[in-house]
Amino acid sequence: MRFVLLLLGLFALPVFAAEVEVQALFRDAALVTVDGQQKLLRKGESLGGVTLLSADSRAAELDIDGKKHSLGVHRRIVSNYQALEKREVAIRRNDNAQYITGAIINGRRVNVLVDTGANIMALNSGHATALGIDYRAGQPARLATAGGKVQAWRVTLDSVDLAGMRVDHVDATVVEGADPEIILLGMSYLNHVEINESGGVLRLSRGY
Image (cartoon, rainbow, N blue to C red; front, side):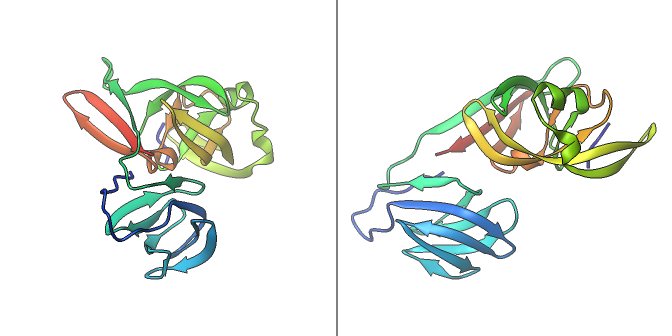
């Protein structure tokens, strides 16, 4: 069933902010903290040498020292203009042409299926119960499937962590019943990492 980093060059001049963090995201605007100073930046505006290029509900594109970087909410760059650590996980395609790996959702380890065709993470009601999610308190919805319409709820996961690449407040759909059999790691998480596939190996990575 289908459901619909910082690499900073080492320069003597100019010197920009030591820390950049995105506090909130809006369409073409973002609430940004730069070296302790907070401001709502609209597209094209700058603060402390940091310029907002674009923004939507998922991430802000920022120009820092002439380089473009993408930051989600509560993602932080702490820089003295050295290359930051980059995390990466390599997932080999299985015999069913699927990329399955382990992840930590809301502090609990589970298996997930990487699905770039799913615009949001999806899990069944059994998964949600095992993760301690009160999914019926979420926003109700009806999903059309091959077997007919099914009841679902829109929820927000506290965190999703894949090989140390943690994203907080991830949108997800909980479907009543046994489908999907394995949790779908959809784009509500994958938008926060880089994705590369080659030779039957999928690599997910992110710089810090």
